[in-house]
Image 1 (cartoon, rainbow, N blue to C red):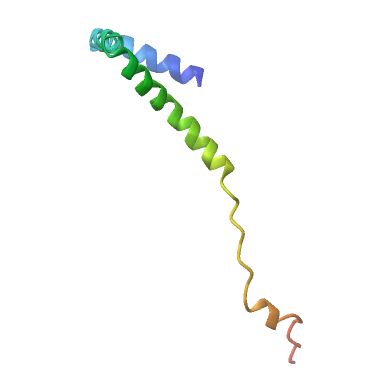
Image 2 (image 1 turned 180 degrees about the horizontal axis):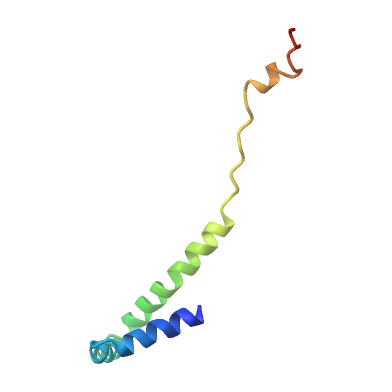
Length: 82
């Protein structure tokens, strides 16, 4: 995971639009400060949503395979006919 993040950061720095990315991050910081109470709630919701989804998927009940309705009619194997 760390290697992937380092690779992505290296590619962003080598990219010709790296200065544009820094400008976007600066604009994001300004927006964060200008809309302080609301922006913090939005950031928390965006960051908490995957954790809540993972928790929900892990706590979901396991699927139980339904019983075969024909199983009660075939309790003993059929006799071999030679």
